[in-house]
Figure: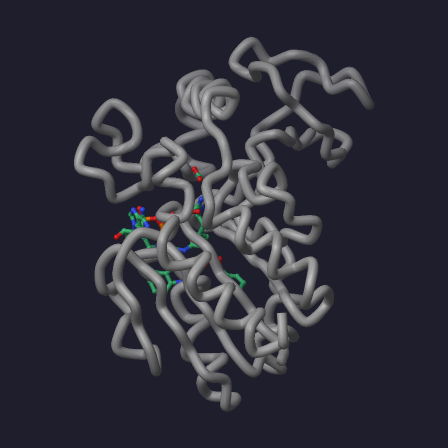
Length: 232
Ligand code: BV8
């Protein structure tokens, strides 16, 4: 069975990573759309760099939760039949044990040099505009996809959605495109679709099945079901 799993901020909520829809907002009352855009970066590069420096720093204080670990267990059994794509820029899937993770919106622990187009691992700060380790030019920005920019790996994601037998969405509000449109594409190609979310998402009516609750409870139970169907 070919399975595509899409995750959003809700899967990292129990690890202590604030979601975008959390009541207190993500950052000092700024609408995310106002900081996570190329325009915001043009207008106030230092402020935007500090926004991501803070999120990068806070990664050290969080751990993967049972939902991340369960998906890594599923990968061990399904191998290539599982395609895990995430909207999250944290590294909790990898720290939960997942080997193959498609970060369609980029990664906090990478920096992108706009001078040499290089992408380099980055754990420190960018607000002091350090030189690029490859070309020496101080043109490093967070390697994340901002609103108005094209998500990463869309060809492979599309290919996997068109061939999926089952599409599962975990911890996402279905408010941001193109990710919010994946369920319709998969369903249009005959895939079964399952939503695992704390509450009905904006696209809940597109799913053939929905289970509402915490990812840390729902995902391990669902993974056990799949593994049992594989005789494990
Ligand atoms: C693009 C990186 C062209 C940066 C992010 C069509 C219609 C309308 C608008 C558009 C459209 N197409 C494009 C747009 C514009 C825009 C968009 O969608 N705007 C929205 C606001 C309407 N999209 C873009 O600009 C995209 N680019 O379209 O390029 C293109 C398209 C296709 C092919 C080629 C070219 C780029 C968007 C990416 C922006 N970058 N992140 C950063 O992280 O700072 S988006 C960011 O916000 C996240 O990555 C994520 O995608 C989104 C937040 O959503 P969620 O992850 O779902 O989080 P949220 O807080 O909303 O919800 C959490 C859910 O979890 C809730 O439902 C909650 O109930 C649940 N939950 C909470 N706790 C738990 C839980 N569930 C389970 N367990 C729990 N414990």
